Image (cartoon, rainbow, N blue to C red; front, side, top):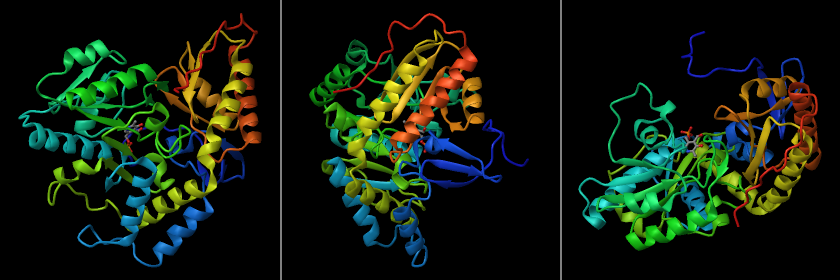
Length: 402
Ligand SMILES: Cc1ncc(COP(=O)(O)O)c(C=O)c1O
């Protein structure tokens, strides 16, 4: 084994994927409710994305950003159309998209507000990536351990607490960066009242409101972006996971007025906007625009949440079912990894979010039959694991932002 042991891997090796299904070498099939951690929203081997990639692979793979290409412009236009933003920077991952946002906020703060050492506010429980700046912005100690010295310019506040935001805002404050559903932090939708107040505060104090939509974006929550479900207008959004349906691509989007603050030479990446990535992203956006899939997310989410409520309510180990769109978390009182391994052996691929939350991120193309099948498997594994029909839960909370 020559790989760094940065990941603990499961003991299944998949060979093929088709839609919601994964297959191993022996032909055994698994239902994929993880989507490669929220990436393959259109399912595996999607015909439109595959055709676009194959077409582009026969033409031109990579140009560098020294030359224009209409495909990049087309994808940027589509992203602006569906988000209401005015400028796009392409990169290769979620962390890089957040790096771009952090750099934009700092430039803007210097140039528009004359702040010498701009500070960005973030929140406990958040996850923004693994680069040095984004792990510093992240509100979880475990991702920082052993990586000092960390860059300055971030202040991490208790979540969903406007008093803390007001108290922390000072002359050096440039921006607020947050997730609207904390994904890695336990699938926790942020309180809509707090989000609206925060948006008003940012406008009043002239702070950039930057929403990390790396996991929530591209239809995952039942809108193109979660901020649209919350009814706010951010200044900057970052996205990645679902954008290429498995081809690595990220993007930082900002309001048109912010465009001049990242001028020539201020930022860049060799692979950003790579033509294969653009072909994949263009096909994903096109498919989502014509298929109406995003409009189906809420009904699928309800079916999944209702099903989970029904099969999990007998068990005291299950204390919460929550989420937004097809981003669902089931909180347990016990470590979740053994449960996930049993689900995997029973034919269902799922994810953890932290130590005790089961995270379900099925592809947006998931069908009713597959949802029912997944619920049945989860019910059977819960019965086996938690058994003995314990006292029923009085309440399983459901959080849906208006
Ligand atoms: C909200 C959020 N931001 C940023 C990232 C980092 O993205 P990447 O792993 O593509 O760098 C993730 C990854 O899980 C994420 O969920």
